[in-house]
Length: 55
Length: 422
Image (tube, rainbow over all chains, first blue to last red; front, side, top):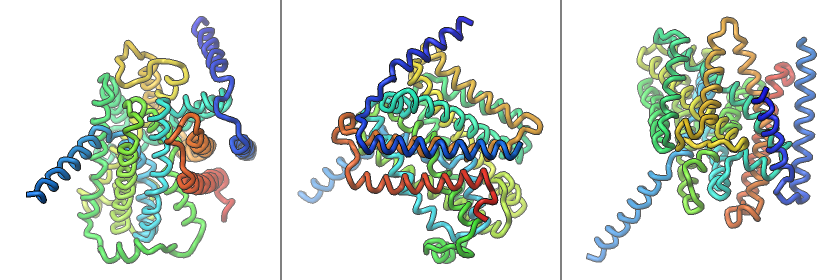
């Protein structure tokens, strides 16, 4: 239980430490990250579809 | 007299450069040769068996592909002194950081399972039971890592890299026709026309050339070795030589199976080794030893890539230069990843085919993200300064990365839906 609490506080600490992206959010960076989000979203949808149809 | 003085001066200069290279060499060679892991050996063996020498030209094209992607990790590691996982967390925030770290953990663990499958299959040819192979490998790798020095670890890993060259004498032993290799292999051609099977094999060859763990491994390795900005050129040379060696080894595997097993369907490299043994005992044995070595090299690098990444983010000591007492979590995570992956092939009825398939699909979720982050980071002039990508480097790397993303996505999707492209 104590270890779990320590782990959770560590995760919180990491999230706080890296809360703000340090890279300059130029248009090209924003565009690349948006395309990446869409790409991953579609891929996850495909995997879920495959999982459901196999079941 | 002047002539001899100039000659001596030039010799001293070249010798000095070679000595500097020998000190810096390591991360590039190890990552590139480990790229020919158990899965890679199977892909090359299947390529040779199916299409003979006809796709050697395609393998040669993979030299710049591998080099341009991996040399970016050298620059990034040497300039920022941070591993790839930490660089993603810091530059893109916690969301993308966790996504990359958790994905890396999954892909690495699943790939490790496939390395153990390859190693157990290879040694089973010599009558070694799978459980003994797993125990020996885990013990051997723990001893290599626990010596407490990056330098020693690297030299041992380079020794295993040397063993990976075993396919070269094997290829000479099969007496291939040099004129056929040159005639069929070096002129770009698509044997039997462009079809589904050929496309899948081409994608598999690209997929095995660039894997997500390679980006994380080489950058962390550059940091752990302590390379500085002044070492970047030698680090790039190291990566270039490594990318040539990895493709040369792949070509020699294609020559072996293309000569002796042409037209024979090959499911995995161990089956190829068994078949080769019927023709020539030594060539089959070389193939099996090479497969075991490839799995071992892959396992060494992949398990370290995960432990380094976790250490960077969780703030644990995470260097091979530290003792177990100084970095317990680094070594525990290394051992746990290794041991749990090693157990899977020993489970009766374990879904190994499904795992192999799953590796391809999960890798497709991480590889594009890691490559896009890499290019964005290399364009961050505030951090990279004079080592940021030049317009030419950007053009080449963007073309290569887009190609890899498109083809690896098609590869992953075709693994999910095998009938989609028929």
